[in-house]
Each structure stands twice: as structure tokens, then as C-alpha cells.
Amino acid sequence: MEYDQRPSLSRKPGLWLTRAGLRPTRQRTALATLLVEGGDRHLTAEALFAEALEAGADVSLATVYNTLNAFTNAGLLREVNIEAGRVYYDTRVDDHSHFYFEDDCTITDAPGGSVRIAELPDVPEGYDIASVDVVVRLRRR
Picture 1 (cartoon, helix red, strand yellow):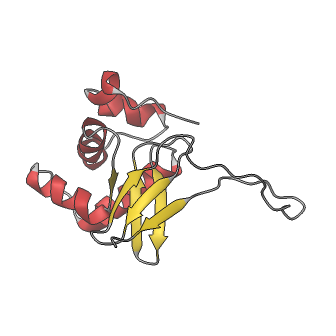
Picture 2 (picture 1 turned 45 degrees about the vertical axis):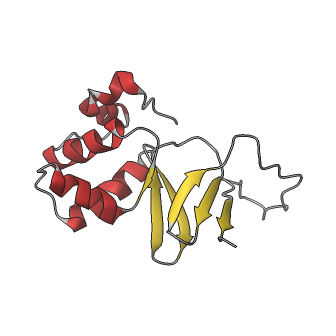
């Protein structure tokens, strides 16, 4: 299920949360406000925590992690796993690929339609493919 995150909801983070079936607690609303007003972007829990502190939100890093997990489980965010210990949260939840820049540890969306997968493997009986994640790692010459 996808949730509209466009500017019409940017002034209503509580609506963004309730549409996803989440209770709009003070901490969730504070973090949701930062996320929906930031537009399409990729950020780590630590980066969101720093933004929250700068905005004067009273949240702990553990609360940020728990909230990001709740938002991801509710379909509001998409988790992009780069490697063990490096997870980015994507505010754009549709299927799309990413570029990861190793030099500065940043991530951006790859141009739409730029990745074509000709064939996927057969999956074991009783399973369906939930998603296919493509991260193209880039390194400066």
C-alpha cells in the first residue's frame, strides 16, 4: 500500500500517520513532520536524529530508530540496506533503483527506467517475490 506524501499532506503529518494505521504520538508527529516536509530523500536514523534535535524535538536516538521501523513496517518509508550497519530510509516508497556514492556515503535515486531486469530466478514453492532492490555502487576514478 502506498501513501501520498506530496505537499498536500506536508502540513498534516498526523493524517499521514493515521492513514497508515499509526497513532500520532508527539514523537511520531515530530519525526513525521521532518520527513514529509523534507520531500523525497534518503536519510539515516542518525541524520534524522540530528534534524530532530536541531528542530527542538524531544526524542532519543532509540525513539528515532523505533519510529523509523514503525514507519517502514506501515509502508510510509522504504528501507535501503547498503551494507551491514548502513541503512538509509527512503521517503519515496515506490519501486525504484539507487546510486550509492562510496566516497561520501550518500544515496540518490537512479533515473526511472534505467535498470531493466530481464529475468528473475524461480522462487521456492509457497513464496512470492516481495521486491527487488538494486543499488548501484559508485566510486570516483
